[in-house]
Length: 254
Image 1 (tube, rainbow, N blue to C red):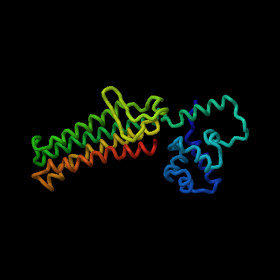
Image 2 (image 1 turned 180 degrees about the horizontal axis):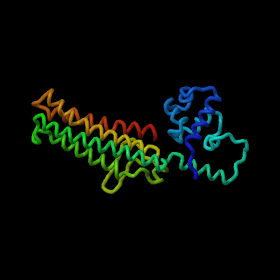
Image 3 (image 1 turned 90 degrees about the horizontal axis):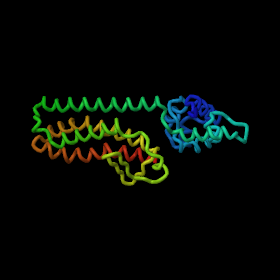
Image 4 (image 1 turned 60 degrees about the horizontal axis):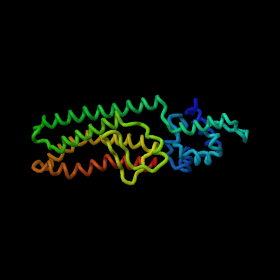
């Protein structure tokens, strides 16, 4: 009832942009996003973040109310019923639709399953080229196990939405049962939670597929000290690949 029609919103933004004589690139520079993001808005593929509404409305020469209504309003006074509806639109503005949520979860599950299959095949491949289970570093097996344990949790069990008090207060820790997560310098909220989750799933999946290949490469370069090189090379990579995108996503949407 209160959802914004993405196609109608995109058509309205495109119309206003052209009235202002701006290209998508010029509009993107005014609201500090990419021109690809503007293109997606206008094609009805996505919606701008709620924090962009005010600068976007100013750049297009309309009010935020008109932007949410996807039309110019002649009346200065809005009926109380319309005010309530607009408030609901703002509240639900950034939330995923059921179809979007289902699509995202399918994509996350597919990435996780593919990374699991590829990693198992890579480990079997190491055996095929002469490595025994005794030869393979215990560190590699531990890393792979951790990737899939935490990746599976992030993908299938982690909540998509935080309690409302995360948006009201600056909270830098998350707990769910035995799981605990803390990112120093980051405050969790419902703006950055899903981007953090997506970045974590991608990082763990990529790392899980890359680490067996890195182990094999280390074995080619220095077969006598492969396990030591693997630890010193892959451990820093683990933190960079996993936590780098998570911090970037958290900062961007915080």
